[in-house]
Picture 1: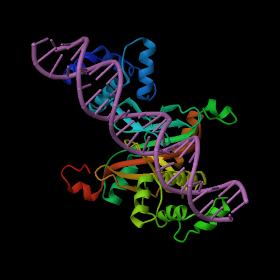
Picture 2: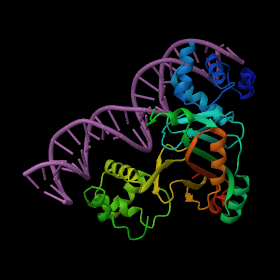
Picture 3: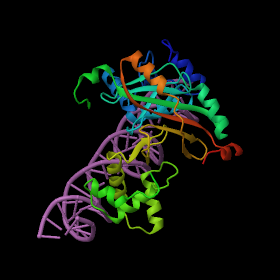
Length: 147
Length: 147
DNA sequence: TTAATTGCAAACACTTTGCACGCTA
DNA sequence: TAGCGTGCAAAGTGTTTGCAATTAA
């Protein structure tokens, strides 16, 4: 999401009321680095002293996902859902199996492949998600990285 | 999993007891077509008249995953975990957004890409998962496929 | 016989929902 | 002031766990 996102305008344009909770939740994603869970957002707002309820966070994230401002996804082995600014419509992440850090990956090697697959299977391909798993430099250091 | 998998031998070799529940659960994956949930396995056994509890299904699937006989994974937008025979160590699926059917994909276009990414990020890459989304021929037919 | 395995019910983690009150527009 | 949005608590999923009874070895 871009740096100076006009939250109020966005909400009104979409037919929603502008509230401090929504402002704060949306603000969380400005200059955002990596995907977060509802709980992450909730904790961040608590830390900032913004009064908000976890249900409201869930409701707002869901609404933003419907409006295609965010994308919502899970990663294998984790029951939680993650949210990230929806830039591209598809997603690629590099997931550290040590510290569970999730990093977006830029380059997409799959455009060609999708075309071939569509022809081969007669499916209409509308997108994909790719997670690559491994250990980040920090976690490689530990003998047995597991948190 | 291969057609005539010797379930009893496998269990004993791994230090487990041979029970009719485990036999039946493992049998579910013989000549298996597509990934299933614990609930799917449970329902199938009920249908066959095999007395089994859902906890037992979960416990057995977990055990098989530990033994690398199965792989366990989730797909974006679905809170459930899926299980499939673990042939390759990584997985590629083609997910129909209409009927939720999941099909394995054979060819893996990512070996090269992983190498480049490892160099670029200094991560140790240990695997990946790739889901491609779209609509299967059946679901393309429907105007608004959504079940 | 006895330790592993099962069924059952309760606990869990994450997420969603119903409802009354409060606050934008 | 009308109705959307919020907080709260309760309900829902999918999954895990403790424990006593059962069963394979």
